[in-house]
Length: 41
Image 1 (spheres, helix red, strand yellow):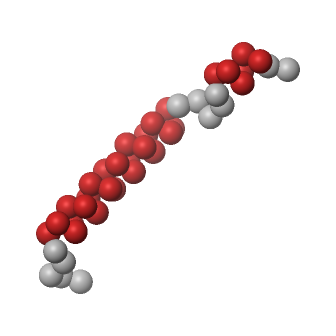
Image 2: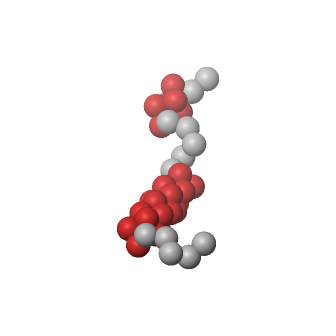
């Protein structure tokens, strides 16, 4: 599919960039909230 609007292509590239950053943050961040750990069991 060629002939896509340039703005649309930019928006897709930007959203993919944001998703990549979010994925990196998600992988680095602990899955649990620190408060949950301090409460413990």
